Picture 1 (cartoon, one colour):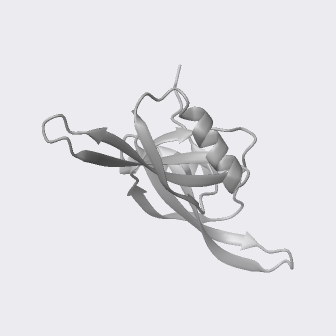
Picture 2 (cartoon, rainbow, N blue to C red):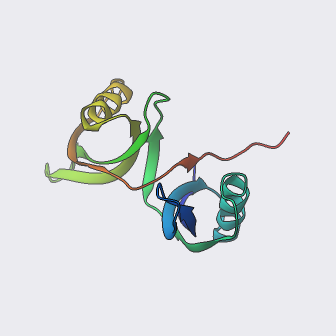
Length: 144
């Protein structure tokens, strides 16, 4: 099971008018610890950022799964409630999970989510779908 950490990277970004502007961009990294997450995001961003940058924050997320879609260029957070019935009391229970979906727009995010959930036997209900500010997501790299 993946442990997803949100890492914020702060650096000087060159604007269209040529001026440098200090920006902070969030990324998601699969890592075992906070230290590994910081190391991994540093390794991933070094080729793309010219000049100095810093990792300004690292925090653990509650993302339970990610649905990948190579055609997508944005990340949407889908909150989904899985509905179960308590056998003893007969009461309906809802367990909320957060799933990240890669998609090109809001409607595509719902389509990708629905397609990935087709084989699910349990009942579920989408609670919300929101676009995230995430710039990219980095899976765990397996070393041979």
